[in-house]
Amino acid sequence: MSIFGKIKDAIFGKKAVAATGSAPAAPVGAAIEAAVGAAASVTAENSAPAPISEVDVIAHLEEMAAANSQTLNWRSSIVDLMKLVGMESSLQERKDLAMELGYTGTLEGSAEMNIWLHKAVMKELAKNGGTVPADLLD
Image (tube, rainbow, N blue to C red; front, side, top):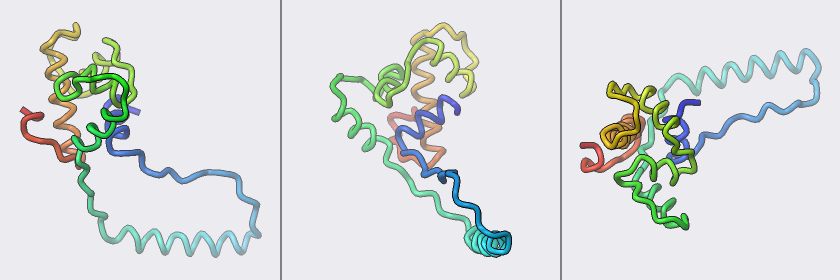
């Protein structure tokens, strides 16, 4: 999973993943009938696109901050934002995130890189269905 994907999942919440447990084997005829029925229901479900619900990014982050024992400046610090969502905020992680998001400057962990990263993460969250105030995007 991408580093941004981990940040997004931590804020938006992970989508439920179907469990792939081992079920008892069914007779072949029952298995064919189940497969045909499942295919029909999937076709019906996929005929209309599901709307993307917007997530209030700030509200989620504020809830996370209230539950965190540390005082983190997540509104402007990529390091603190990553810590808040439970991720490693090392220079290597930030370099990897910068490359993933298309940063073209020097990957030295400079203030310029970190400020760019924070804004880029907020913009990506907004692109992916998050509601982010304009002051965190500029």
